[in-house]
Image (cartoon, rainbow, N blue to C red; front, side, top):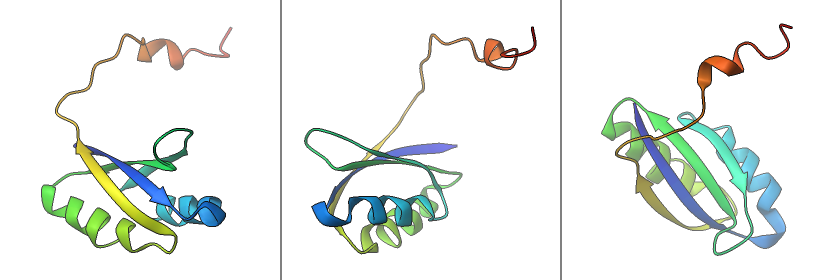
Length: 92
């Protein structure tokens, strides 16, 4: 699985609509609205590099309200969280 983080500058008056339109795109796993240098961060997960072009350049960048994007491709994932414990929540 290839993961990319797409930093999105969006029209200020369309952030919620832009975020939802991005979230509805194939390959987009999550979209976060943020404070700071960017308006939205989209997490894109695909199986092949060619799908990144479809999801980002062919889709996300063309969503109404998107002004510009910067894409960062992840190499590895690190976590200290215990994923197995999440499945036992509420079973007590």
